[in-house]
Figure 1 (cartoon, helix red, strand yellow):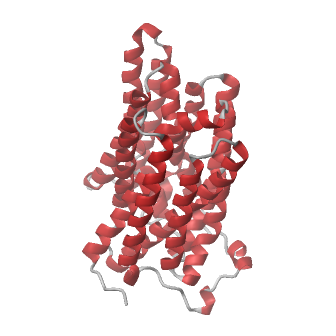
Figure 2 (cartoon, helix red, strand yellow; figure 1 turned 30 degrees about the vertical axis):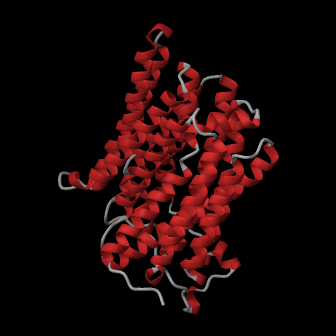
Figure 3 (tube, one colour; figure 1 turned 135 degrees about the horizontal axis):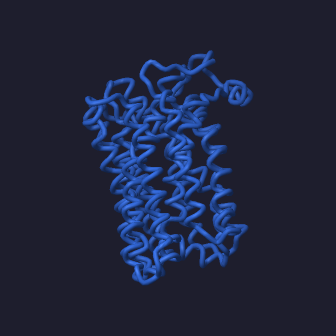
Length: 401
């Protein structure tokens, strides 16, 4: 029988899971130029094939929450971790687009499955302890992604892509499985009540969309996705910098996300959360768009001024977007009557579909216009639009049936 653990230790272990998750899935982003070179693809084709991970994510979001609710979190979480890291390990070995597409779909499913599992556990912890770990867990995820971005930047040109990713996949899968085993006594258990026993048909018929929160989330989260997908490539191609230097704007972006997520609670005594989220969305959208627009208009002789503006723009984007997405995510669970594992999945489905469409638009805007800067104005504009949906974050707001 698994040993009981107290809330303090459980909180630390949940934070450790989020840290490892961020460290693992973001490790290859600074090395995307190498992945793109392996596949011999142009920007449009590379962006399109990367977006196919959303297919796996869609099915993961639609099903994993129900599977957890029916069978419990222990076996499901271990299986999700194994799918995630085995597919990542395979992806960096591939040089053909078709096989890359297949395993990228599996990778997208693995990311989503782990996401649903650990976020459901975070909500389960919140319900049992009244300790809110949603935003702080996002901060630990960002910390992991920051450290792995720094490490990946340092390893470029020193350690091969395959050796880096294979080692990371093995080590992190073992660590995360060990944490899940330690958490076993407090993990979500199967729900034996017949009225909550979802069938395949009910997965679809019970599906509900909270449009204000879902649209708000899609608007504010895509800037983070866009900079993850294109930030390093954009900096490297635009300014002709080394791999290490091109990773630094994204590193700064992630650092500011961590700061915002860990410090936002200090500002809530001055104004409600929805006011801060509105201000943050406008700050991130206008700040990033303004800096990148100016930077790309400077002559080549002022390359380092452009680089400084890139860093400033990424910093403003990171700080402004830091707590916006977690706030919409927490609101989705609060406004729903469904189990948290189901909410995490259903809420993600709509956003995955929207983000899949936006990723294609951005990728082919880059391909046809030849301007990554122009395409990145799309997520900046979406971030600004996200301010419109912040009324859904009010504590007394409820979802319409």
